[in-house]
Length: 324
Image (cartoon, one colour):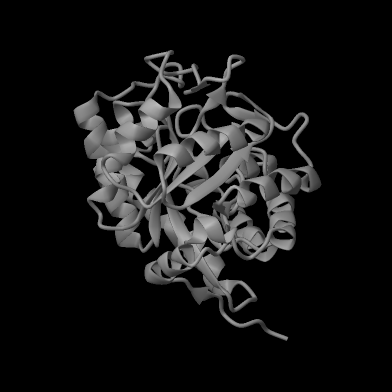
């Protein structure tokens, strides 16, 4: 029996559900899961080239996340800003690669055999801006701003429901990407990466940052002073997510999200050694929801099986104290 076309979730409906205290399931990793499925990663543009070379794999990944129960799927545009694509010799294809990423997400949503609404997040990130790519030029801030304005507008024009800023960890570049995203008029969710030191301080990960003494609070405050609709802890260690969320909730009283990683990075590939099991991931995710987190998914190393466990095991609503 043929399924019904997937309902297109509206931005207004998504906001209503957040205000109502619904728990929403975000998808898991995009780049590392594409790598896991055999897509080669590029040193400069990482997973972005898949929108050109492995479109069927990108489409299938989105479909698998929807089938696993994701309410939100993320475009494969984490590393599709001009500065990353230029490093891969694809600077003349910025528009096509970003538009194709959104089209693939839309096709996955529209063809899935279910009638529940699914929302599309347009991903932008700090990738390629902090010197983590040997030999790849890091743009100066004015150029970087233009690149983010370009990408944010491309994603908005292509039809994403909101913009998702990922791996934000810098007080100079964070506000730049935030201003570019906010100018589109779409809701903007922000994913911050942090770590917990042995003395309990919550800091920005030290690799590839200019200021190695930068605290999570400093970055959070610098970005959220501009605006934003949701704060998420992402690309952080699973077992450190709860204390980072606790600090975030002291500074931010709107909706919260959590999507940490599991495994480790050996550029340009992700290592899947000792990735947390779906069952153990669900145990941790229940703690986040109990603390008021409304959007739960996964980052690097977390795949469709983890998302399926979240869909089956998490409650539909957060505790009333945060939903009010």
